[in-house]
Length: 52
Image (cartoon, rainbow, N blue to C red; front, side, top):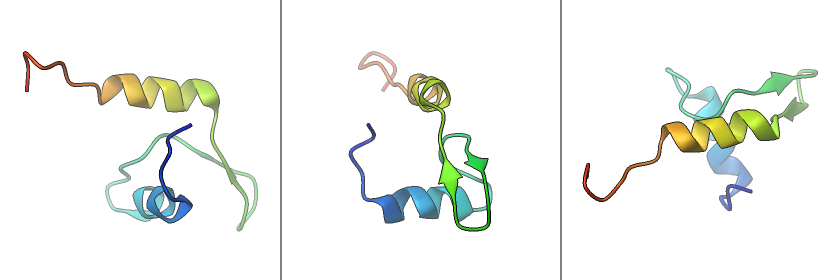
């Protein structure tokens, strides 16, 4: 959905402060993302040309 390398999402998730979308940690190695959370995160980062 985001069309970025999984390592990018991992970096966003482990950055301080966290930079990526909200996530659900099912176990130490299993991370999931809600489609709704990812969509909301994308909308929150949207920039219109007039505002740029």
